[in-house]
Image 1 (tube, rainbow, N blue to C red):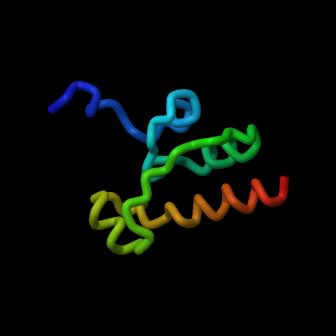
Image 2: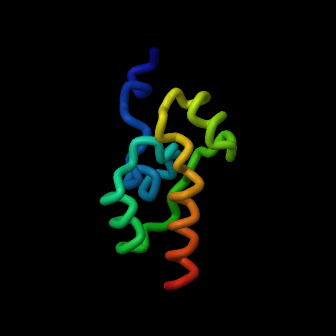
Length: 81
């Protein structure tokens, strides 16, 4: 495998600074709050599907279905700013 693939993809700082895409599967509540508080934008999110069950299966991650919840939090925070 390419060496770059061993690097975790869910670093929102790399998304903001370099345009990398993140999946939001390994993001913590603390990091979500930090992104909102610091108005970090834009971040690029790779969604693949909006069906939570299918997304969990595709990403092989039980937390992958939470992505829409996080996107809604980001949108609500932006609308309330």
